[in-house]
Image (cartoon, rainbow, N blue to C red; front, side):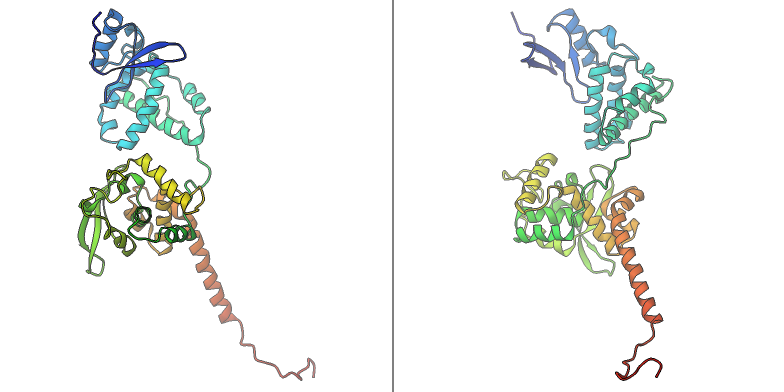
Amino acid sequence: MTRIKLKYVQEIYDPRSGGIYRYFRRPGLPRVKLPGLPGSDEFMEAYRAALAGMPIEIGASRSGAGSVSAAIAPYYNSTEFKDALAPSTQAMRRAILERFCEQHGDKPIGLLPTKFIVLTLGTMKPHAQRNWLKAIRGLMQFALSREMIAHDPTQGIKQAKVKGDGFYAWEEADIAKYRAFYHQLDSKPRLAIELLLNTVQRRGDVIRLGRQHLRDGVDAAGLPIKTLHFRQQKTGALLDIPVLPELKAVLDLVPADQLTFLVTRSGKPYSGNDFSEQFRVWCDEAGLPAACSAHGLRKAGAIRLALAGCSTKEIAAWGGWKSLHEVERYTLAAEQRQLTRNAAARLLRGNEAATPTVKTLDPFYKKGV
């Protein structure tokens, strides 16, 4: 029997059931489970529909017009998804929506009740709730704009509040300890911390930076200065960041033939996860707390700018934040610390002015004499 070869078809063996399951996996479309055996009418009908960009679950009748799966495919190809969202956000939301499609792809999207959304969110932790709600809300708003549904079932549902201060912001003692351990300026661990701390950028942008992003510029006094000119991966913002002396000292030692400043042992650029894992190893070797992370240096960099007296807008411009509220959240602790010290200085100056000069009294002086 001749084996049928079909494009975009993936076979997965399940050791628990002993069965083989087949899926249609095409970039830009959700994963679609294909029923029956390759070549059968049932299989080929589902395959042709998926190839045309009309995802079908088990049986065409289960995933007709108006189903969840029928709404997801055009959403992936829409400007709301492809153009408005960063690649990293697209990947995260695609993973959420594909799981949602596998569980509920055959159900009518127009009948999805708000109560179902609320109950599903109740089974998740706050961070997962926020990501899941954003993904589903994006799909529903797209479906509403295309008149696939009459109302958005996520409307009125508030995002979960995440308790705590988020990522741990490195203390100056942490930074000093790391630098002392990796004291050689031409070492990769030292290069990593200087890039993260001095650019105040996310790991996804730091691992993409290279000599092609360096520009000649001038500082506020008109003196020549190097800058890093690049577009943020997540926000699309075009940034031009001055290269501070601490960063310039290590960048000058990076080999000129490297495509990016940070490369793996094989000379290739890091992926985001690989860099995070390697940075964790470096932090452990330096004896730093487990809470120290690459993103914590972005927060530490923002706090440094706040303590230096930079305004919220200046910090937002350096880090590429679009929301000033987010910057205020990052720098709240730093501003509180600085404001209390300013207040203490004023109190001390006031007390000094109000306190009379105390003269040394004659040792023979006695009260009432």
